[in-house]
Image (cartoon, rainbow, N blue to C red; front, top):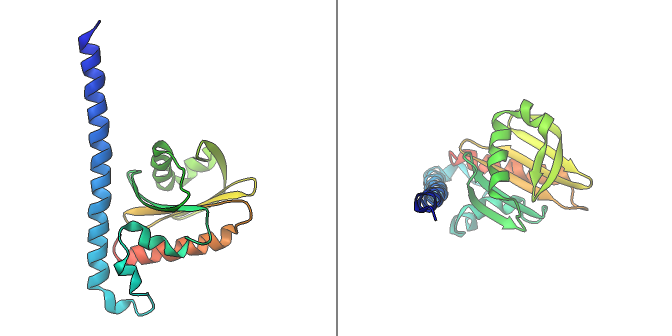
Length: 178
């Protein structure tokens, strides 16, 4: 029995949990910062329902894609999940890859993107957005200032509608300086 090996694995596990907690806290910090910016600039938002402010968490920003996608999420640029709506099944490593893909779109096009263990082929990549497909399913990714919004379309859902909804979410996040 090698006690140093056991202690090393325990320390790595504690370190990984600390990083996960730090990423989660970072998301909450960004949320409150964005919420304050939204409140501060409220006079510039005449067409947004006041219910957006009463909803708690990042999920409030996903209202524009809630009904037109199977699941959606807001992810930090470090790959931490900040908020989700619907049936969101992406794994932590996949979310970290989404952030990396948007930082280097050219490299991502040759590799594709995975969601819930399935590989999607990137069919469109421009500036800060990506559309990837697998059969009749699609993923839409778009980057704001400090986070990215991802929507997953199941068979029968229209990727163009999800893309428009994601763009609306990103516009709200950008106006809130997120």
